[in-house]
Image 1: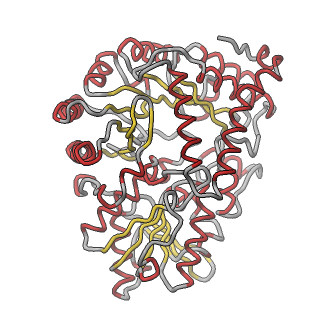
Image 2 (image 1 turned 90 degrees about the vertical axis):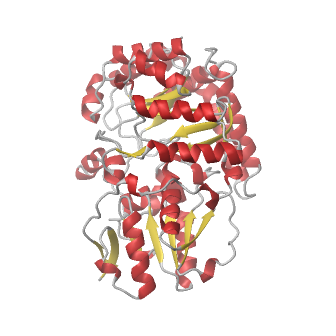
Image 3 (image 1 turned 45 degrees about the vertical axis):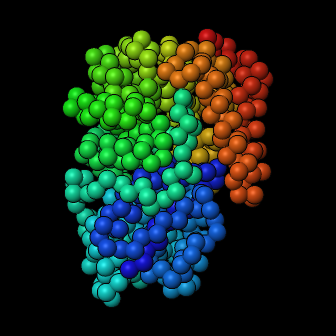
Length: 487
């Protein structure tokens, strides 16, 4: 059976196949290929031109990992269905949007949660003329309503194989990051044991489950040997290795001539200085901490509990050891007060981070904060297409906080400014700010090499953000004074 697995294009999304949440496409492609399916991967972030054999496919699975790719996914789906090709939607946005009334206008089935076994069973049913409605772990339309079948058990990753990276053109997917010229996103685990009120991970992926470390190192061996990989950004929702796993990574680096370094997102309260030393020896050179807020009140509401002093100790230990630290914060939460925001700014400024990554809060369907706001009639998604326009953490579309948009924009811009002017020396060559300026320049360069229709919008977005970094703090000194923004 010939099956196309498709990554739709998203706004300003240039190399989506290696984006953290697009790992599901590659894991699924590998799984289905091993089960005897004739698998073709089409990454529309790299090429919009219809690949050979597209309309001879017997089914297509479209992985909607980014909200801004919904419209493109719908357009591709509609063209395929016009030719009589069954279309299956999968991945994070598809799962979140499944209850919305217009989703099934664009696809025939949706794979719910992690879908390896559901995909195999559904494709076999399509191929043999069986009843797809008997397949567990899917959604389909019946009498104008969306029907959800019983859930599939989440897969045991030890039963799967390492990702087959020969299915795509890896060279076109490398990113520059920190000191790396050829960085890819891989993953060592899926899911998260926590239940933050703003996050969709529990809904889409469930609790944390690890992949066998030998699968991870086998992929790295191949990518270093065949493509010169020099960096791995682990896309795990929670990156946390045992001593044995760190030793396996250290050995992998050693047999590859220490050719690569790595990093990822984790929680600072889970790390000790001894563990950080072992991570550094195994190649860790950067860590992202999802701190989200400095307000104790908001942390309780979000289910994001940590001791601020413990975070400072971990950040300082990373600095001593040589691991760069990035702190992620979200502002503009529903009912966030000026005092909450002041606590966040004060906490962020107290940390010796390499980068301050401030984003606006956006509603994600199915999460506790969204369900709360929906029950209060403050927000409600009526169409899957709304995700394409609304869910963007670089812009504030719906402000239900107690803080003005101008204040939020000024605070975000100030921390962007601190990041690009940061002189702290990191594990990469040069100052931290220089590394992020290089990253920004690389992004602009990628826009220039993108599709012609994408170039103006991409350059406008980059220019708008660059101007805002300096404009807001200069134009609103009273806001800087109000929130004590100085460093």
